[in-house]
Length: 414
Image (cartoon, rainbow, N blue to C red; front, side, top):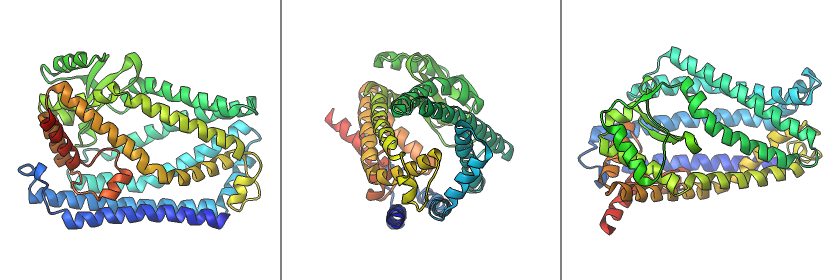
């Protein structure tokens, strides 16, 4: 069984690398061609930068993936998990405390492993192409804050889940599912007001007249927004973005200051109208429902599979702790869910198209949204020629050229 699982793992990894190869091959063939939708906006020099940026990011991602997978193979298939599990068990006699240590040490180790790649990505690639604006001090501060917050949240979540396991041995699967659901909803309230301000400075929009136009647009859409902010994203990167955050009465609109510099007001409103479309079309709610249904099924399956030593035996271990079994379960779920990746990506892309059409209806046209997409793609050096299979598998948004064509098709129909 161990050999079979290892072969499945290798098949999944190789499939991912093959898709990456297809994507880069597509760029080699078509990367010098300006799509008609970008004529007049993208010149040959910009196309060359897009290709180089895409290739360098992909190469770094490949190296990072190879390192991660090699570590995973050694940890899971060479018996290191068993040694680690025994070491954690020797530290304390507490089921709860051992569980926290088991996952917390792994979190710290994963963070440390990612440091060299993050440094190279930010201070080599992103800086080379004019995106990175962070200092090493700010990068370090973000790393420490992120690790501290992640450690605190992980500790509380693991403690809560394991306590439910001990308190209700027969029905913990149901209570743990409810607990995770409650934590997720709570974080949607907590993140905008307590966590995000630890990293970014939120302040009222400084562009004269824009907030009034945004509120008018929201009222037209029948959506109440508590606050509209701009955030100092330019302290870290020149990349642009805008998003909705929060839930219920604490929904916020957040605009990157880089976006406000890049776009005119009509384009900003079009981008926001697209985000409103996700709320009005209930994409957020549908995503939560789908996620929770899958989580419910997964936790129920885990309840049965965590009994006995079937899971550790699959990796050649005689026995394992509850936490090690949970880790093995998560690994197996990742293999099983891999073939479902294109389905989830397709559902996401369908939602993006619906939101584009909603934005066109709300703003009275597609021109501003199309020009906003052109600017975002050009300034962010987005790949204009992804391989169709790679995009179908991994892209949560339709490729930008396809997206602009879709907007023009909507305009012709109206």
